[in-house]
Image (cartoon, rainbow, N blue to C red; front, side):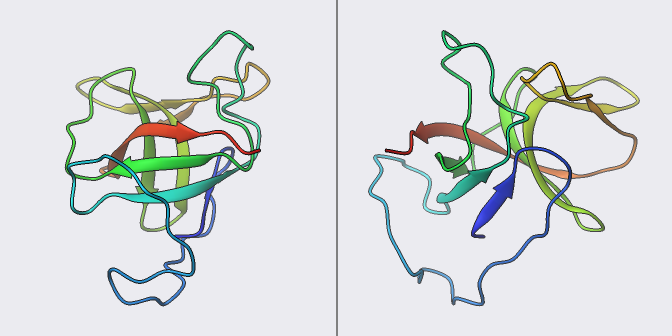
Length: 126
């Protein structure tokens, strides 16, 4: 996956690389053998300056698919029919809410199963 939309659902692509290959690499101390980085694109996850979870376009996000996801976590959400997006995750009995940090955007309400992966780290663009 090259870019992850921080806004509306975005296209999903794996760049046609075999597993374990990419055009660039980032080192991480993750214990998840399936971990990977995506580059954030968009501004729906920009929060206040003092919000450590604020994500800016160009930031690298460490996705750890083997980690459990809990309410309030920042996630990479995948809908096979729509693509991927980065949002704050909340789940109730009947629905999933994907919330932006930027107040000018509305939450996405999901009433079907989607795949979510925990984003456990961020590297700010230089």
